[in-house]
Every structure is written in structure tokens, then in C-alpha cells.
Length: 338
Picture 1 (spheres, rainbow, N blue to C red):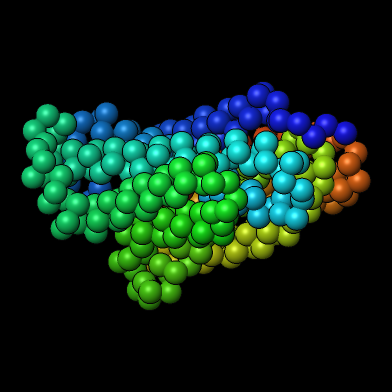
Picture 2: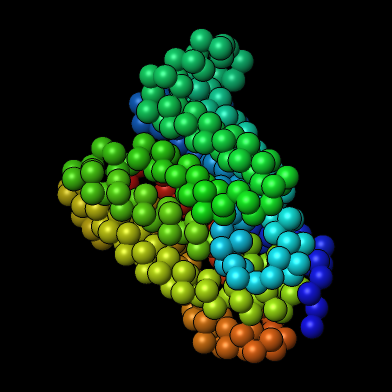
């Protein structure tokens, strides 16, 4: 039974599956909705209009990876340290890198949104950035996200040296908390009953991130049947909860968005770029649910018995679909419902 370090090709599968799929979802979303500027803003350069969703897609990948890598020690808890430490050491170092990328992407998005506001990429000064970061809700949220991600980098650096003496719950909690500022600055903040809808959007983001991040992190265990047999059944329970949470809150948010367009009508709203992306996300969610069901009922029992499976391939396919959905979501957050 292999118990050594995970093969490099398995570790490399995380960005190979997730990054192109998420970027592809964002680019498809731009093509469907048109790369338009936010309401009331003069048309900025196309590079800015495309750059913002691309940077936010990378931000999402980094955030989800940080959540999953932080969660991994909890999934393999109770196994002996000599068995878990080779994998967890890789996860701790990787989480520090992804958290740093998360903070960097937040600052890149901040600069691009200031460029969008001013309609140029050449006449932006420190004063413009400071004003946006202090006076605009979206700017403040990005600064908070960057600060929390850097705090995760610092905590992760301590964990790299001290190991699991730094509780995984603290790292996971900080990563999940850093997801919260951005969703409350989106569409839901201006809707009727926005307090409840903002909460639904935040729960949607938390559920989707824990689900996708945890699955991506499990690929680090694909070369170790013993750890996989411990972690996958635990993750299966978490994934089921996240699936239900993501589906319910996502549908509630979509219906609320369409409800804001009373004059347009529900059927007509589905025909807009926003509606088409919502439909695409629902299709992705249904496909992910079917793949998750296969993992739960066909592969998990075999994994628990230490029987070889094609877990990495099926998980990679599920991650690709998740990446598409995240890319669609990035564009949806900037698209007018009508």
C-alpha cells in the first residue's frame, strides 16, 4: 500500500484542472453578456473590461485553493503523524503560496476597477487608489480581503515551521472569513430584503468554496490509499451539505434577482445574458451533482476498502465543471440582471 509522498503529476492536477476551466468560464461569460462596463461608468479600455473578470477568476481559484488546503488536515485527522506529515507539509506550503496569490489578485482587481471608474489605465495615481479603497464599498472589500489573505500568509508561515501545532481550524476559519467581504458588495446589496439575500449569497460562496477547495485538496492524497480512505468518506458528508447549501442559496439568489425585474418578466429575464449564465450555472450544478453521486455511491465504498479507483480522474472532471461555474459566477457578479 503506497504511503509516501504524492506523485508530482497528481499535485500538478489541481491547477491543470481548475485554472483553465475557471478562466474559460469567465471568458464564456464575457462572450455571452458582452464586456460592458458597470452601470454609469464611461467605457474603459477593453483590456480593463476583460482583465477584471479574469483577475477575479484567478482570485476565486486562489481563495478556493487556500480554503481546501487549510481544510485538509481536518479531513485526515486521527491518522498517525508519520503518515500524514509528508502530505500536510506540502499542503501548508501550498496554502501560503495560494493565500499570497489571493492577496495579490485582490490588489490587481482594485487597480483595474479604479481604471474602469476613470476610463483609463494611464492616469491613475496613488490618490485615486486611496480614494477608491476608502470611499467605495467594493474597494474597501478588496482591501479587507487582501489584508485577511496576508494574515493567512503570516499564519501559514508559522504553520510551515510549527506544523499542526497551529490549529487547522484557525487557518480554515480565517480563509472562510476572508471570503465574506466581496459578496456583500454585489447585486444583492441593492435589492429588496438585501439583508437576507446578502446572507444567502455569502452562504452560497462559503458552501461552493469549501466543496471545491476540499475536493481539490483531496487530489494531494490520490497517491496514498490509506489517507484517501480516511479523508474521502468525511469529505463526502461535507460535500453533500455544501451541495444542498449551494443549490438552495443559488436558486434563491437567482429568483430574487429576476424578481427585481418586475417589468421584464421571468421568461424574458431568462433570455438575457444574465439569465443565460444562470441557466449555465444550474446545468453545471446538476452535472456536478451527478458526478458527486457517482463518487459517493460508487467510488467511496471502494476507496474505504483501499481498492484502487480512478478517483483523481473523476475528481478532476468535477473540478473542471466547478471551475466553469466559478467563472460564470464572476461574470454574473458584474452583469446587470436586465
